[in-house]
Image (cartoon, rainbow, N blue to C red; front, side):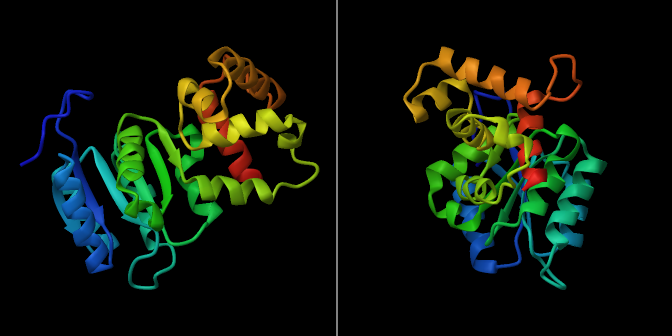
Length: 226
């Protein structure tokens, strides 16, 4: 029985798209146990799109690689679902760090998106925290994805204008954490976090008048340039 989510004021309705039966059923059990209303659990992209159209869920958890070719069917289906239903929050799962898939979801300053490695699912608390963050309109990028993408920076990249501490702040921001959580992670004050983020926006030419969310734009900036 789904549990009322006092934080959001609604029961979170969710669709799972994962071709691995064992993982799909595991996700089903975990999410139901956490109070989500799993309205559909499917194994392919076509079934996923049909389930989204039928049930109009608030959230979708989607495997990047699904039949028939096990390449990018899942991410294409996730992007298509968001275009058809802009309010849909999407958390994609991948066995590997695949940078282009993350940028596909974050394109155009998109919100309510996440990209996690499948190994993160086994850490239930972190997985559920990321899912709630995405469902609430935030972003959640796997720390391992962030680390690998930062390691791929080019010397002429605008990100290189940032100081080492500013890069640390941006990397944690990319995971989807707010200022208070960033401060706790890096053992600095919230005021210091605010100053670092302001400098990041300045150095990446992200102006206050921009229509897009500047935090998402900053994350997208380094993802696209990796």
